[in-house]
Image 1 (cartoon, one colour):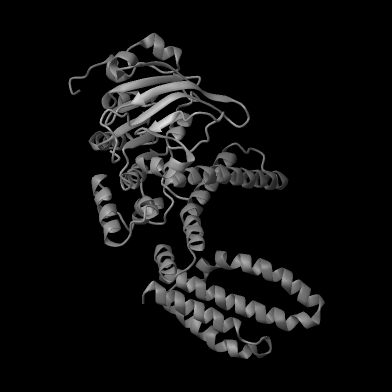
Image 2 (cartoon, each protein chain N blue to C red; image 1 turned 30 degrees about the vertical axis):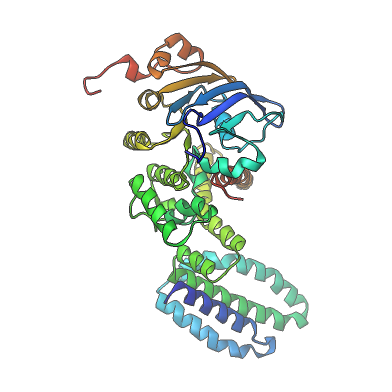
Length: 257
Length: 185
């Protein structure tokens, strides 16, 4: 948590956030919610619901349109030009396609990308990078080239790059997309171990059930329902009405679960 | 030999080759022998080098045609052809001797401007992805191309290049956002 932040301050606060794309298409309509420190919140909804647009706002990657009062606060800090650097450090953003995020020629350089922007170098930088690689289970991968890694490994390098900036909130856009079952299982276990608040936009409803304390259902740029994952996702008519379905995990309880 | 030394050697070699006067190109025999020796030692076959030399040959064809028409251009053309081949050969040998990541790191350590080093690093990172994307595009097109006349093939190739360019732009936008998200300015 940032110095001087009270324990009761939400990690993320979104107040009546609206957004329209430059050509005028509305994407978000008066979206409001809070994420408590350490809480894991799932963002569910059909394609085009506005999930990714909402996530991009949490990191200040989209301009506030129409301009007005700040509608996003990170640890009480309003999203404004003057606070952008602090907010981007406190909010780690995992993009859906790891190839968009891995910009450096080696794994080490990529994990170091954020800390270098923060002025870290030499031995402390090396220690931090190695610690983060260890945290995601990729110890010794420093000299590898990102293009030679598997999709799951790339995702984990991306996560290490975020952790290297010591974020208070992790914002994850479809973290399990494109992963095989083993990769998905490993990534879920890793995410479960990571400290801090998390906002996860996903179509992987089982991930939402297993990891999130609360889920928000978003459709047409509005939050249409929120609640505990097991309760909300068991509501079959609601799920079907918004392009989702009751997850298998809640339909059949296997002896091994 | 460290990558810094290799880079410095290649830069010195190229500078020396470029300084050879156009009317005394016989001097180029010495650097040509040097680079040939390095090439043989690197164990790289000529076939591997062909794709790297094609863009140069294309450029030289235009210059060569102009030299055919104007005799006063023949000596400068010959000098430019020899010098560019020697310099490219030295860079080719260098890239076979060191990995791209070692060379990029060495460039940064030698004080190469950050913008140039970052641009090269991004090119190195994203070129294989573009190649892969291009392969996927070609494969997808091929799977739905039933009548393959030459004209149609060229048109499809043009479409694929345009699509690749548009996808590249979209990716560039996403990469930029991802860099901003991690504090890049």
